[in-house]
Image (cartoon, rainbow, N blue to C red; front, side, top):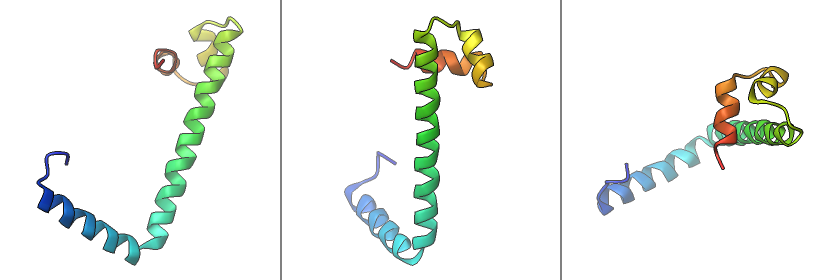
Length: 79
């Protein structure tokens, strides 16, 4: 998508604006889903960092939050 010509980018943007005007409910639902997902990820990330600050191991954090050790590792290495 990033390699679109200027003309193609303008056409795509115009089409997206028209689609958004015709489908406001879908746009609203997409935005709600997007931000709810972001809020949940942020909450998990903060919980992981807090538990790590308390001295828990990655395995203990994963068990407490009911997520995989790999997920805990990904969040901790995100910095």
